[in-house]
Length: 299
Image (cartoon, rainbow, N blue to C red; front, top):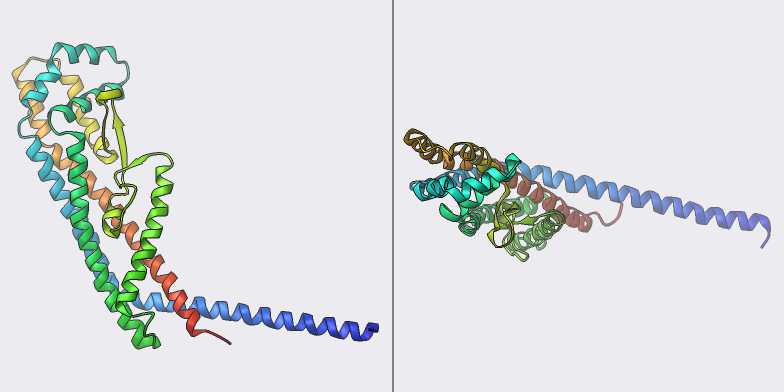
């Protein structure tokens, strides 16, 4: 092959490569653009239900937690009596750091008022109930989305309601499992190792705090520890007093605990529902991109 033929041949190959590369870039851009359009046009359909979830789920969780702890704190006499006892007083005096004294009071609270197991079980039951509502809401949203995509873009099988609902569920669980693995790298979670419900899993991505040592250790959600801490600090300072007025003051203080924990629960649940909405949008984008690939075959 002479030099001129060689240059012509290599030039033709390079030209074909450039054209192919350009077509690939154009197709990728067209797919991404169509996928974004598909997701954007569904957001008005689902935004109302998402906003409703943000308003109702955290509020209901807050009310249920308030009621739960209020009932447990109706009779705290035995708890206060233990705190005022000589053994606890000696233990508290032996500790130099505030957080150590606070955790001793938390430990006794979980022994005599409500156990850590009962707190976790109540949280899991609540997440099961509210998570079911979230999943039912999403199923309704999938029906609206599938109708929109079918009418606007002619998708049939892949965008059918049952297929869309099942596929989004699989992808959301995949994302939630990845999130759980990352969070577990440095802490325990209220969420179990295996799970199949999306809403419940999203609400239980909550860190667990372990209090105490050895057989006396208790585990409770981290946000409850933070809500309890100022109460335990207050009690650790007051329990040495035998004054009846102080005893009544401590009982009254504890009667307000449910409100404080409920407020903290509301903050956490708002974060979890918001995170679930992000997962849903990511999932819609992934599915939309797959459907767009089918439609944008060649340019």
